Image (tube, rainbow, N blue to C red; front, side, top):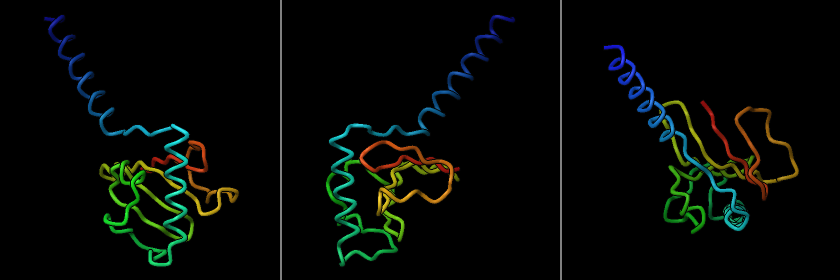
Length: 123
């Protein structure tokens, strides 16, 4: 009886860990990929045909950014936001600041990946 309850408890815990792992996407640290994403984000920010405070239509996503399979791509006065996973109030994604030398707004959840790109998780 106790062995069966223990086994059930372990299965429930394993299922919960599996679900949580699926909710937290991975991110790339490959320098070549990060350089391509940064270059494409800079091109989007420099393009006068792209509104500087709105979502970029999927038809205008450059290849490296599109390969991330984002939920959307948004440009604002601070940079380019590329969320790749949204789960209720949580979101994970990439952020590319307009000026990589300028410190980010004080907000927890950012970690530097390299090449002037940050990974974020907000909840």
